[in-house]
Length: 358
Image 1 (cartoon, helix red, strand yellow):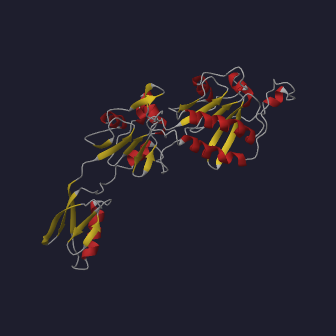
Image 2 (cartoon, helix red, strand yellow):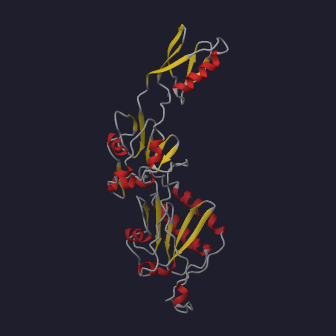
Image 3 (cartoon, rainbow, N blue to C red):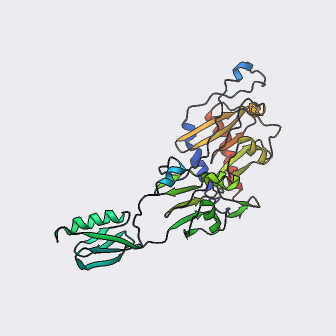
């Protein structure tokens, strides 16, 4: 039995997943027929052919976590230039003027709190020394008149960043001096590679990689940085930064129907329809080039996108970009509506998936 590639769902699950992906399509209203102007009996004039639905290129589908974004790299950088804020692992000294016995050196606990005389637990993590001093003075006024508190950071926890995902050595690393995104990848010994279709390839999905700083995504373009050497994207890291490099092998499209090698295709960066068709061996002579459809969507948001490849070849339409989970169907006949498209695509898709299980 053939085993699943690293980072991809097991083949016994994939027919079910595809069924769930497409099941809701039958409830959509039918789309208008996509007629080939060159077919016998067609009454469509050349001028009317230009009115066909135009496939719209789709941006990279995975843009990272659902978090707010910094407006720019500069905004993310300047936001970290303020006063130092305490964090678990720091050691601080607290003293009260005229009360030598109240001088204490305390660690900030993992829960971000400290415990001080009379007061008990106080939140220190995330506060500046001056903010903590004001809190302590307020609480001590219950026990003494006009307390004058001093808070000094004696030992700051070592600054560090985290890098996870498809690097050779993911983990938490110290920031010893200026460290940028490229330096972080180098410290993790570079991007990971893996097996795909019998070849060793780089499996990092750079367009979907991201950097999170203080719960907001920094708009770093990892593809421009790592593949094109654009150093404007090489952001200096700060304490607590989190880098994630996802796998490209978990993202697929399916090319089925009248092509020489029907297959699934792992998206590693930008993938257009014509490139995917080329990787599938090209069209058979029986392919209906004017009636290709792309099935796209998740669960309740499913669409059928008609594509006239003749117009793409002629330069009249752009080559549409594919999204993760797209099913490209190259038919022998004109498809009239959604139900007809499903009736042709579903058996072929399930047969392809089941065939990969053995």
